[in-house]
Image (cartoon, rainbow, N blue to C red; front, side, top):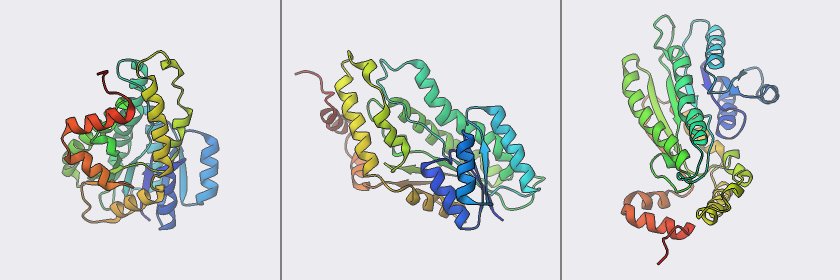
Length: 283
């Protein structure tokens, strides 16, 4: 039986991917941070789903989970590691607390590094294991190529994932382990719905306050019109079962908009975004 580890499996892309892979006959190990979520997912997905209780920033807990997975594999390799867990932190660079930047990078960048170091040997860098080499799927974002204002911490984390994945893919060639990036646009997941919960009142005296309110509404609109997480899950499943996947998959509900952003001059895109958010300087 093919086995996959997915971080951040309680909701969204991670949940949808776990559900799809279990339905296709995979054994799935999914990380959650709460025992209630572990119990819920075990009930929803059945015997071929094993919850792993850890926060991706807790190295000791992740290593303990890797030992648990190794024991369950019984000497066989892991088919895939899906580095999915992530958060989105909003705020202007000039005013966002450094601790918030650290939290963003800890979860979205250091977390995948910890998980990759813990589970990487099970994908086949450990020569004592039997079976084909596995794959690492890194969940990036369209924000990994184009950064929006007031979402700089999130964009920085996803740009970092893009560079990390590029380097890691070339390193892991030594073991025959592939690394593939999946870069979704807006998806109907709690990471977007939580925009409504973002408290911007601390910026009420900031010149960025009106733009922050606008971008919060924009994030909510993106979530409402986003792709179903099952769409991303299907891409991940195809990558894990493909002999020759591409190195990067960008999956968005509005590909033309992202294409225009990529081909238009940067200064023009700057002005378009600034006008939309009210970030143009006074005349």
